[in-house]
Image (cartoon, rainbow, N blue to C red):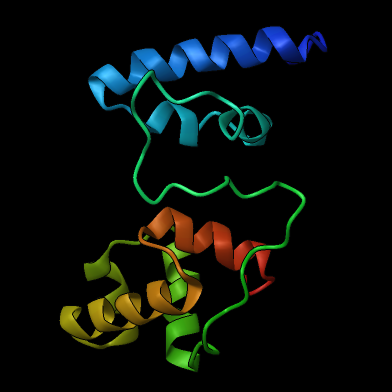
Amino acid sequence: ADEAGDGARARRLVARALAEARRERLRRPFTEAGPWIRRYLGTAPPPAGRRTPGAGPSPRPDEPPPPVVEELSGREREVLRRLALAMSTEEIAADLYVSVNTVKTHLKNVYRKLSVNRRNEAVRRARELGLL
């Protein structure tokens, strides 16, 4: 419906999909659907009598990502580069000649500085910011 230019129908279909997904507590299909769905997620009505606590407006796709909290250190950039190569924590540690715990500490700092919670989010965000 979105590709056909029928925004109203797409909005209704997304709202129906959200209602079905709430029952199963599914989020992933919406986070992986791509940027086209964002404009509809912010407009889908909440189920009757329910509102997600603390839910604000969804980010607009044309808005720039939030700025980096703090500059990444050289070592954090090295870890991030290897993260983009889909290396495991153990592989990164072996490649950099450091312990696994040191890599985990660097990863935790990278996530905090990039305002993300997962590896794939860190890589995506780093690419958006031109760090990779």
